[in-house]
Image 1 (cartoon, rainbow, N blue to C red):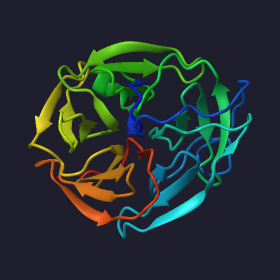
Image 2: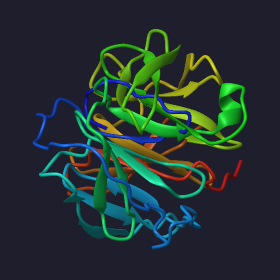
Image 3: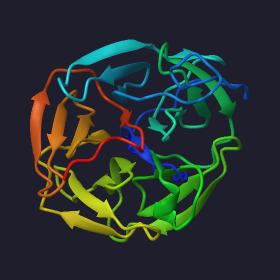
Image 4: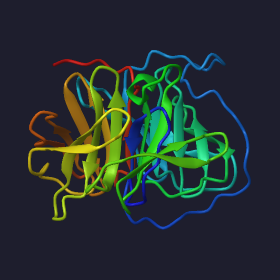
Length: 271
């Protein structure tokens, strides 16, 4: 996601763009089923990777790589700018703006505000499986930022963010993704034009670089599916990234300006 900063929940999976201007948006509260099932269960069999711009939500078929727009975000309070999204193991999608936290219905892009007191600006967002934090239970929402390597846990109901780890010499260039049996990966500032892929250690979030650089810059959204990392750039590029070499391959160009992406923490893993 955007060049904002880092967010951390105990569920980790997604991110967004850099240096965007804060949008409108007001008054708090609300809650809506975001599972995509249209029920109150909050559970869904997620079969898509999701990506978004500042104002619209898209789904990506992870096998054919076809991208389909779900719709423009329908804000519960005024208008806003979605800076990143994350999806937990049950299929619930959470998104953040510069100031607020939203629950998003993946079937129609309705964004219902659950907090207007986000304590920080984050350009990386993801749910992280609890076991990666040395605990049990629900996934945890985490965020990262471009200012430094600090990783935060975010309470979506209050917007409160607390530091839980550090990437060391690396800062977020756009997003992170966490999947059970795969681990956590982050696009990082390489100090040059192209982003760099790093793997984050369980619990500490210490970063280890993979290869030299991805070959693409401003990757504000990342996701994972069956042995590939999906990257979405602010310049409209959709790339796949080899998690073992860190090298990116172009799938599509001339798309919209991507601000973030996400996938369930239970996405399939192939080694």
